[in-house]
Image (cartoon, rainbow, N blue to C red):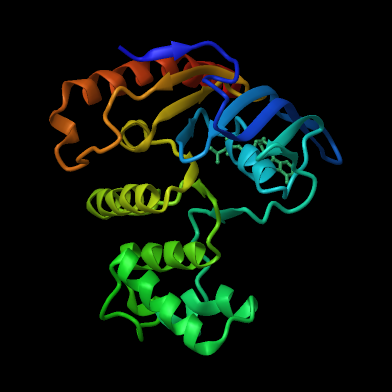
Length: 275
Ligand SMILES: Nc1ncnc2c1ncn2[C@@H]1O[C@H](COP(=O)(O)OP(=O)(O)OP(=O)(O)O)[C@@H](O)[C@H]1O
């Protein structure tokens, strides 16, 4: 049974790393005002994998942008490790659906870009890039250019480049949405393995409820815009989980179905809004 909790910080906040406190965000456009999110209270623990789901336009990316310090709340506050986020949050790394690889640089060149920007010595850089290539399983493709890579390999390269910054927290906005089912599963397996081995904290946006259940410790379900938290659901699966056999696990199928039941009304409301 999904333990669906009402809006609130959602869990024990002792190991809290990120805190959204009464966060609302409004965009003033020339012809209208868009209320993106409203009164969001959410606490994310260090090392936790939290997935944000909800109808299109409910403000999920806006929340990631606020955690990264790229946008600031119109009211309320975002805290990171106890400090107010009021500039770029350099403890976070952001990856979107578009991998933004540099087409003129090969895999090594792309992954080493952040290390060059940081001014690391060549030897240190090369050793670090080699480690990252091993970590994401790109051995043998070091000298390939983005146009010569499969979609999955491009994602691996982008993930390795993100990890080169060594961010404490990964903000991942539908990173695997463009991949076919098999590649997506492979990337999910890699991401879980990497996030556990490096103890990363992850805020992950997806529209795919199977993906939400497979990856998350908790899933946060948002209402239609202005997005506010409808439910926070704990994933009743062990953290050490086998994604290839998960589909046969009754806990997984039940949680996916229950998440559907939580999100269906929000999709109907969005359809109502559109008609
Ligand atoms: N920089 C911006 N300027 C103006 N409006 C914005 C900006 N960023 C987001 N919005 C608006 O805020 C609302 C929430 O957008 P956001 O991208 O956060 O939603 P989302 O839940 O991530 O959507 P999707 O699932 O479709 O990616 C939308 O109406 C969007 O048009």
